[in-house]
Amino acid sequence: AGAVAVLNKEKNFKDYQQVYNAIAEKVRDQDDADDGAGRYGLLTRLAWHSSGTYDKNTNTGGSYNGSMIYSPESTDGENAGLEVARDFLVEFHYLFPWLSRGDLWTLGGVVAVQECGGPKIPWRPGRKDLEDRKKVPENGNLPDASRDADYVRKVFTRLGFDERETVALIGAHCLGKCHTDRSGYDGPWGPSFNMFTNDFYVRLLQNWHVRKWDGKKQYEDDETSSFMMLPTDYALKEDSKFLKYVKMYAEDQDLFFKDFSKAFSALLEKGIEYPKDVKPFEFKTLDEQED
Ligand code: HEM
Ligand SMILES: Nc1cccc2nccn12
Image (cartoon, rainbow, N blue to C red; front, side):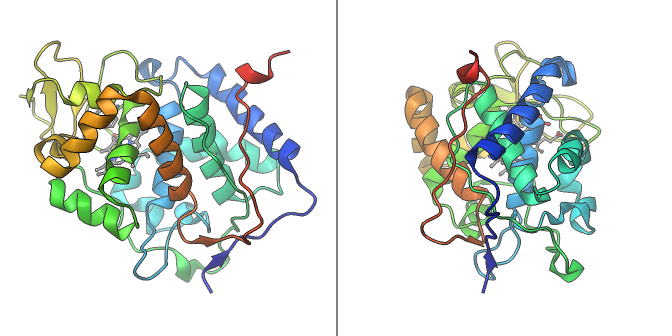
């Protein structure tokens, strides 16, 4: 059998909302971190990379085991910098010892998206920390940003997503930034990287050129030279099938929010089997709980 969700009978919605709130308060306290990007992008990326190792052909990888603390996954170049995200969350592992790493890391992504204006992300607990080190996925499943549209298609097909879901998921690049000491890419330096919007698509449809610098090939916007796109981002605009969805989301933020919510929620659960009667939680944001 695959990874079967293990439900904690003593914990209910209220307990998980308490964890959500604790993480959200710390995120809010660190809104000035990372040149003003805050922690939204970083935590979203941890949830994505802990899930993105999934391979539908072998039903292996995914967020269930919280395996990123073990090599080779911990030393995968694509995960560079995510130790900062895991360190940010580790105190909640001790504050709430009944919570697994996989649940903590994916819940961190839900907090990140929801607390910076994004859509609600339905979420279910039940992931179990890895006992058997042999189950750490091999590196190579997390995508390399220097590649083209067909490579992006291949990666997300292996994850079990279609082209529309692929474009919706990559819209998370509205958040956070690239770090030369992590991926080797640099920027963006512009505003709005701490708000969840459809900006990524709107900007992608503007005019870009290859940035002249001594780092990896990346794009820079013609107008202000303060935004950036990765080659795999730019590939979405060069490929006619992906471009259709880029335009759709650039024109309709609500549609982007709806599609992103569904795809991101599914991403965080790839490879996990749930009893059919287990309904996802939909957490309130801090703002929604203000008395
Ligand atoms: C073709 C697929 C993708 C590639 C090649 C890719 C690559 C990258 C790279 C190179 C960075 C910069 C990392 C750094 O230097 O800190 C990055 C950042 C980021 N990625 Fe992606 N990504 C992809 C898809 C996704 C998806 C599906 C999500 C979420 C659903 C996502 C969320 C993020 C976020 C939020 C950041 C900002 C992280 C921060 O601010 O620290 N990415 N991505
Ligand atoms: N913020 C951000 C992070 C990662 C990739 C990316 N592409 C465009 C913007 N962007």
